[in-house]
Image (tube, rainbow, N blue to C red; front, side, top):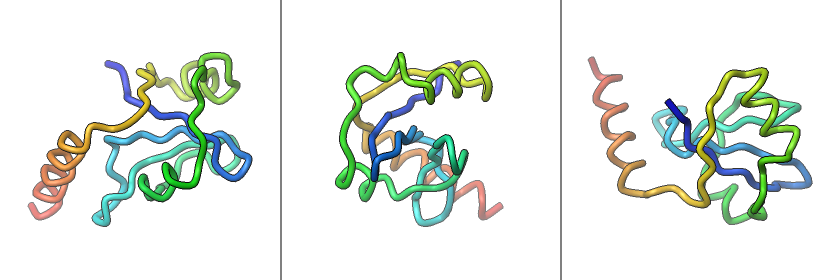
Length: 97
């Protein structure tokens, strides 16, 4: 199974955003960087304040995620908002149980 990921340059650092991995009740998503490794991120803030990386396949972060962390990545440019909302509602319903 592949995991959707968006690579961005944010404040001089390369980030991998996982737009469908909901991190908390606020709707933040998971992200990964060399220094901080896994953490949360406000998707809209990062997108608005970063640059798109068009060819991430040669990046050390791409290699790290696939070879050391174990992801099988599907690189996308933007998230499908309806898919995200459906996942967020599903996740919130699961947390109420």
